[in-house]
Image 1 (cartoon, rainbow, N blue to C red):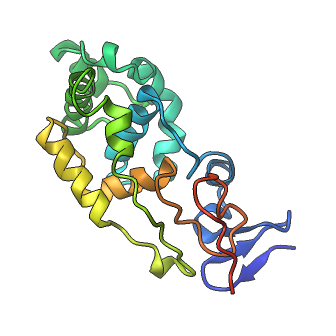
Image 2: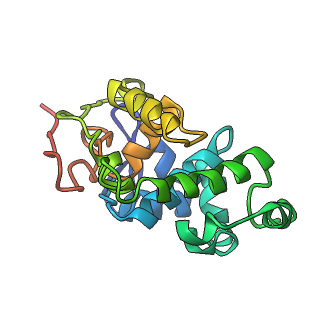
Length: 208
């Protein structure tokens, strides 16, 4: 039997508590249970998530998840070396591809971001992955309700500024905070959720 428990959590038929956004849609539930908030530290994986967060702007995350297989095919598995070589003809091809979000600004930003990822290789930043993770905070939020989940942080604002200075686009503070949540840099699972602390980087912080 499923039902509400506290503010913003739903206990499913499996007895596990999840936020309302992840409780009804099977795709979102699977994403929440297995992927969201788990550490991602490889260049390609982070480039994919950076790209998808940018495409999500103004849309629902469920829309992006449903289109992710198409995105992966259209953008060569988000291999930054391949995407960085995309030219005008590729942009036009992608604008005709109904499997993805056909937004010219976001498509061209993704190509430019791939080039910026390559530009970080061998630099003082230590590469794209190391640079992103250098902005991990020393503490994580401890939200009890959805209203207590931040939409940005000092670290996400600093990361956005740093990435923009290095040629990245569609990397605002809110988008970067969403990325930090998705790849485990912060844990914004609600206290009481069965996924709280699942990344292994932060304690579960049980409700007291």
